[in-house]
Image (cartoon, rainbow, N blue to C red; front, side):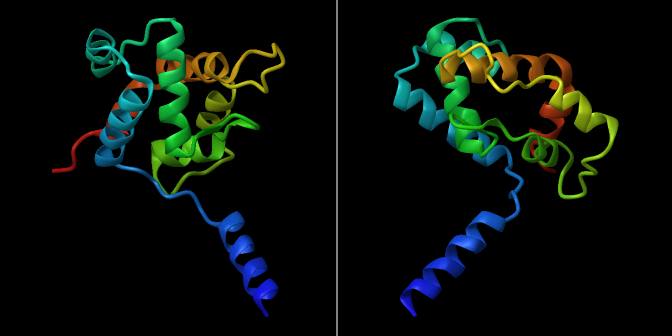
Length: 142
């Protein structure tokens, strides 16, 4: 019986839909990653302005935040379906052109980069191509 329950729990977790995060989640993830990585204040100030310089600390910060969001993992990379859902909400049509534009920003790390560089490469493209949509999805709700 214990094995059956464990299998049911694993199936439930594996099939669980992505839960869209909010501004509060974003701020918490940012704070956690700043603490975990000991990010200096000058970089934090840049991040708050959506500026992400190409350095090792920033690359790992991006990986940390995207991992906490459930949008990136070091084994399989970016989850385009989750990114799409995060940006447009629960009504995401994963067959539309917007989904294709998101997918164009990510790769399977054919270069063999470390996870921080891989996350940074995809995230900077996503930010460059979709910053207004990202900011809208995280705007404070009135």
